Figure: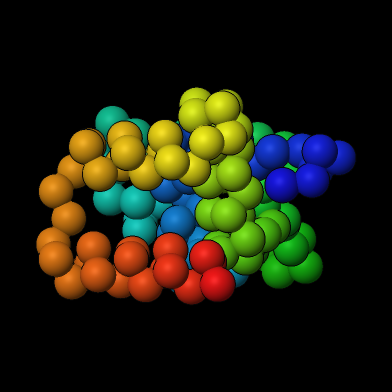
Length: 127
């Protein structure tokens, strides 16, 4: 990630909303709230307030043309996930991909087919 770029650091709740927007595309607050499948105690107004905060932070954009405002993720999913991964790599692993990979493999058991795909990705990067 370029040093001049502000890192994308959504909270867990903000990331949940971004995941919905990446899956559904532009959506109203009501559509996002319904898709989140949160407990009844998590009300619509909480989702609305969070999405307004996200708009202020530049995580989402809001189209105010229609009666029900449509929200969209500001960055495409792949680009945002690359930024999140790069930020985590720098902050938690001191920029060491080897350290990240070691901890990733220790944290979870991956099925053999997925490990094979990971090996191919690593091999392709080394060419």
